[in-house]
Image (cartoon, rainbow, N blue to C red; front, side, top):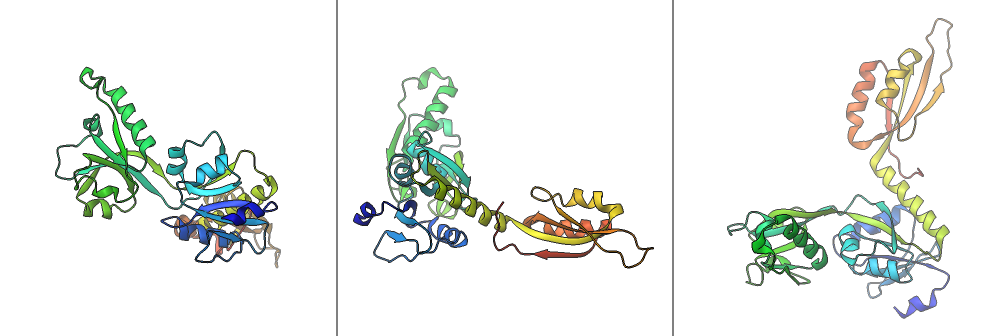
Length: 307
């Protein structure tokens, strides 16, 4: 990390060094044409085509390095940003739409607890102690039970193997991230409450040293996300049904419309329409266009774009 002190002319971009977000982040950086080579022994990589140095850090540390340190940009989970309480120091630029999971209250499946309110005053274990404490403090306030007024919220920190805490007698319940739920079920646990739903976010310092580079990377990543979410639908349609077709394909902002040349006077006026359509809806959109009278309907992949 001593190399960081010798990078005055490069934007520092903090990304997760391992875990559930690492591979997706690398794919996103590749899509944004941030080229780099990372040695297995180093947690820093210099971009070969942009004035950027990638700093590979634990996801939990990234909000602090962006909010209070020299990193202009970072990618980490919304859960980590909220746990670090750094919203006053960072700009939340983009929800990257990957790494989605839930921070949930979990208890033994065969235990006596079915509602999170029952856990006020019990032993809770989590690596998200701030979020867990705030959650149970709110439950305590809303419970309005005089018997719980003097009960202390007891949340202890455990960094790993949180799901084993109940079985090993350390906790009555845990607060941990749940993706598929398989690990939770394998540990004999069930979820009885959700603290928050989280995903990976692109964040920046409120006072970046390289604001133009931050803006460029933000635009590039927006383009990558749009290319993943949309496809380009091209089709021809008579002008008489154009309004109906545009209702089916309004586009991300608006469609592109071109007039087609007529070969014979008696031909009806036709237009060519090009529109960005959500990838998940394209099958239904094509069926509706065909039923409306459109023809020559083509769907093209978008490898990258600027939106």
